[in-house]
Image 1 (tube, helix red, strand yellow):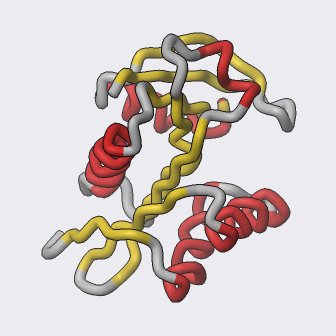
Image 2 (cartoon, rainbow, N blue to C red; image 1 turned 120 degrees about the horizontal axis):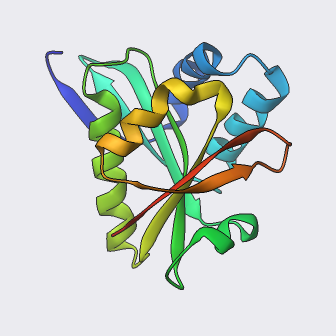
Image 3 (cartoon, helix red, strand yellow; image 1 turned 30 degrees about the vertical axis):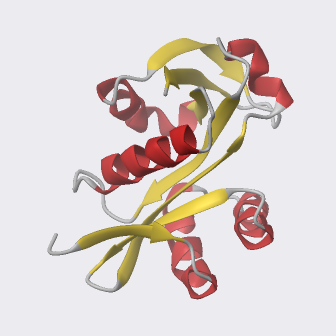
Length: 152
């Protein structure tokens, strides 16, 4: 990796991000929902760019009602999305660290996230970043997974 830059999302990043989404989620309708949230601004998004190429994305929002039972504080955010083109390059870690700083600067008090069983290979990543495994959970779409949290 030559020059990794973490920056805010630009409209022209959407196509590259959608290509990254396709590496993780086979369901086209799900990917369209993710993209619509990028476009409508309901998720604050950060982009990782390496030598001018978009190589990752993270997004966060106020924690939705279905995740509140897993929180400890009264102003939680949700790490809504994290996807990178190439794993094991430090891109995901850089995106999460910047997102946590932004979340804290917006006066959120903790971060929760959900990761489904279909992405169990990423679970140790959150453990390594000192997120606390809270509980198994079922997403609104019925997928089983795990909840993590971290105070900021």
